[in-house]
Length: 376
Image (cartoon, rainbow, N blue to C red; front, side):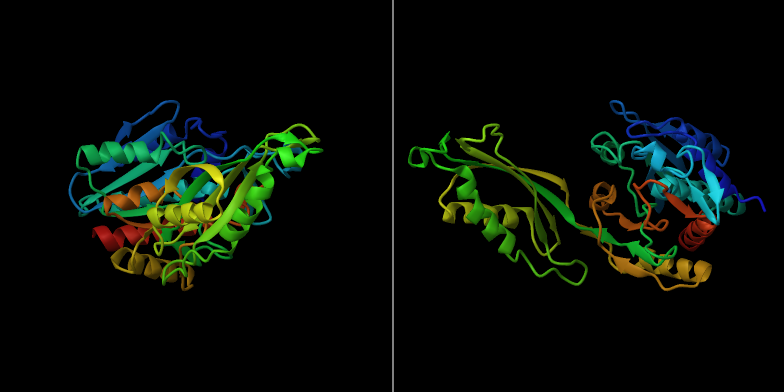
């Protein structure tokens, strides 16, 4: 039986859209949805292709959001099949981007086309936001589009992001929020010298050891109903010393907080400074925020999604805020209800990425059920 969502997934996978390249994916989607009454508005920023498609201009505004870029395929000799030649094998569709997230995009298009065909005079508006900058720096993608939409007062009410949230079966987990991500860049200064004359030096590594121990042992918060406790992780330590007989005079440390709504950026940065001050070290410290925590409460959108999953695949979904950041961090601050729902994520970013062959079909039906519930 011809499955439009599966066929579109395959066509999208053939386009080698390695971030930040779109490779024609957005043009394909645009051509298909413009025939369903959507108006296409490309929004390029720098080398990044973004696309805003909208049908009608009344509230509420329901948005499908996703990315057409994929991570590089990795070692080609490890793939069972060409990563950009979608292949059906033993009940799975193989190819880079099948799970993350071209099956979701195909399901978006299929659901929206079916819905507008059956309900041409639907309530509210439907839109789709696509970027080719999610797997990269995420600087010229969704965040820039949201800034543009906000500047002209286009307000999103409901948003589904097609990230691969499922763990064992399609729909078993949806993400109702994400933790914040805060990066720290710490330099601890000592005095460089010769290892044979340690009394003339001040070893920066020796100074940093108790600092790291204190930071690693700190309980930053206990989390809350929606989030696990905030975590602290060292991601890199480097002395930049190339000599075996030199006492390092500086240590460069990178670390990351994945934080819940139980902590704020201000509280975390102050507590780190307190540890450094108490440790009596000479230091420099810089910060970068890559995302603030957000959560969508169990309201209208969440209830509709849970029912749609149950009706389509017969399982009770679990609500989660685990995992890394997503483009939801740019959309949620506008006040939109944001939920992420997509394929099983076991193979994302790996060689031999794949989805079950019936995933695009069932996912399109779930998205369609959601549209019916919200816009009719």
